[in-house]
Image (cartoon, rainbow over all chains, first blue to last red):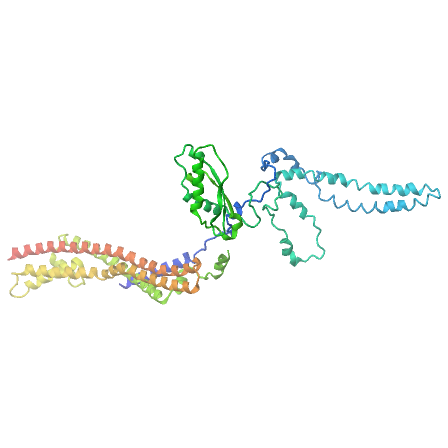
Length: 318
Length: 235
């Protein structure tokens, strides 16, 4: 028995030592650093709001951004080295002001000697002084063709991104502040505000928008859908009529603040279908039956007047 | 991101090495671990001991059988063996021959029920030998059955204390939860470590002991037949 005990103890000690040597410590998993993704909860209203429009705006086709052609047609121009092209240069504007003050004193000098030589003929200084302003004025026109040529690449840029690009160069030429404080970098950086793309600041011409569109009060698409759903529940569409699918009824009605129908429903369209009268009356009945409507009170301006299209195809299908 | 940084800061500086797992455990879990380690040591001692004993017994039986069936005189064989400490078949032979000798000593040999006496003596010897071979095998069986439960008890206790610590630290981060559970699971690992060899060894050795005993019984029957023939021839 003693031999077995000794052998067992020796074996356990050996295994323990081996375990300590073989598993000194668990290796920590190498976890790749996960960049945090900022997630904003944005109400759908932000994307479905209607833009204020003008009724007088002319109907025009909004040009879609055409990204395909411009890069393929003009690939050579961006390939030019910055020094070779005489077109794009940010520096030419700076030499332009420096020669400008030189010619300005020149006419003064010219003007002063002019009265003097009038009584006494002294033709020598006149050409000498007159010759001086001429070369002085010459450098001025030189940058001009460059400045005229400078806007040339702009159409290339604007054709790619028409809206945002023109705004960007305007910020850059701001002269650096003399009392520059490094601690206020954050304040300086924060001055760049994100480009507003809402209806008011849009650079596109005004479009035909909703009649009731306002700056602050918007009905979100989900709220409009809710209203439509409420009405659709009470509506018994004219199923049996001939051509019932084409019986679209457009009804306008006013709502009071409590959600009741205050202004009588008014059918806006008409049709030659003999069943249209029944369809229109069923739509009006549905509107009257479903009141009061529960809509956000804060946006009363938006739903004060409602126009609903009763389309059997849509309302039955959905 | 903030919680990630925080977790790396507050993560306990504990390793998963054997000693750190042991030292960080609760006292009950420590006792369980030490007990399981002791059980494992004891089991392996028994395993080694039984391995040697059964091997030795088998060799002795084979050697004795070759000597016994070699045609050597039983009296001579008894003369060489009866002074030693004998085991297994040799012990059977010596016990039967001693009874034979005693029955023939004296003025009136008691031959009438000599056959039954010899059988009984050999049965007792087989019992004693089987007991010697089987001793401590029950410990293996007990450890094999109970060690997993003991380890599980340590694990449950360790997880209970770990959860209490987690609740106290008010963080459900995995870095806080993991070390306590790893400690707790170490107890189950030790229990299985002790139990698995014990169960395997118990099954093997109980089978080996059964084979050895049946081999001794076979020899006892044969030897009893030989002695019975001798008794009948003399009577």
